[in-house]
Image (cartoon, rainbow, N blue to C red; front, side, top):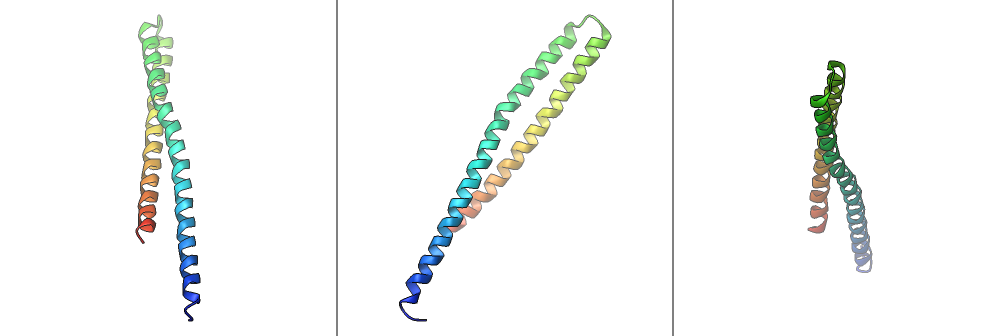
Length: 106
């Protein structure tokens, strides 16, 4: 391998690392946007839960109370799902950040 080949190889390796870092950065941004949407949705589930609980407590008849209690329970489940999805997204973001850090410190 000649001396003139070495800079070419180093440039290729650097370009590949730079491209990988860009791709990781884009993936992180996309995941963060998804997480932001979920973080907006979670309080809305709480608000709906409280709304249905209030309706259940003020309902005049048993069938209405039961219906509102079921709806409230569904909101609890929705919130759990959203929280689990948020956690998964954060774990994916954290893994990508570790990869990104490894590439930065090569």
